Amino acid sequence: MEEIPSAFADLFERPTIAHFATVMPDGTPQVTPVWIDREGDRLLVNTARGRRKERNVRANPRVGLSLVDPDDPYRYLSVRGEVEDVTTEGAIEHIDALAGRYMGLEEYPHHDEESGERVIVRIRPDRVVTGG
Image (cartoon, rainbow, N blue to C red):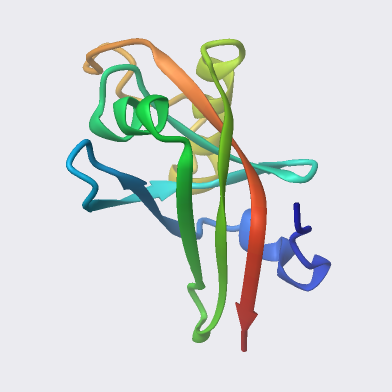
């Protein structure tokens, strides 16, 4: 496991979009822009159960993430790792907290519109590359 350098911690405190790469059943990559969070040395992605990325990581836990500094496109963080856990525990509170960072709202506005319950995908970084 590799640690995220402290010089890049600010990317998790601002509304930085991450590109989350998972592996499709046929072996091809699938990439989705997502909100990203960090809990200690693990990265967190919040999604709804049953979405393609959630189904992909249950079948194959190897993933990749790329974050680009919104203020400097040459400053980036790239992570390859493995999903250690997919849990509903705390997922609603987590998406509400992310809505605060990304939307300036106290509560995620699409709770009623989502299909499937919220889950947190917890990722262990195994390879970290930075630039900028």
